[in-house]
Length: 306
Image (cartoon, rainbow, N blue to C red; front, side, top):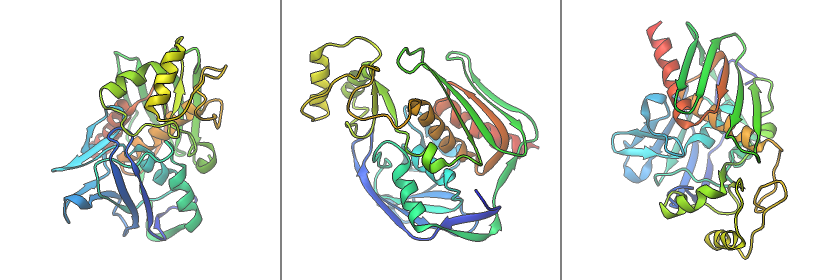
């Protein structure tokens, strides 16, 4: 975000892959858009008018990912793409997609960032949309203890703490501000899941597109060789093992705190549904898609009421 002007893409970028939760294969094309368009998804399989603006009012589900809907059109698992667009400073884009779920790719934002970085962005004439809060905004989830607080400030920043009560993860902190190299420090960080959740997810058809290439697997509790072999079979690989640090050996961590950084990646994507760069110091404790998107909505309500 080195300019106060809006930006769009220089070129179109195509991605194809399966959705993490549905397993459905989608073709998705990122296209340049005019000033003040914002980020708008177009479900081209549903017709010429099936547009879904990426704003907090359109959030329809936050069950393990963020879904937005308008009329009959929905698009799910938008958070990694939204994070990449925000992190790279893209204000305006049309996202054409021919199925219900954004491809998971490698479970991070890196494929999008690499494509955008290679071809660059187009600087537009209109000024970038900065959101100035009229007051402190806070949302809480009393059941989980999660909260997100935004205090008005000239320089946007986020400080995040992740605490799953996990001996493997520990407590992880992550930080973002406008000087952060998003492409290096945040974009490569992949989604993660606990080993003990996977059987439930598979049995309930919630990770039809999960495989060994797009998720970090945390082994929090003792598991048997049979359980590991069953997971290898589900992932359709010859074998899997557990590393000494408590992670499945399907992938190697990019950072010791990659899971915390991935939560920051998600939060940036979800908060971008506020519709601009929020000029605030944001503090987030145990964030997730539900509280993230509630915060984006609260910010939009705060500025509409001032």
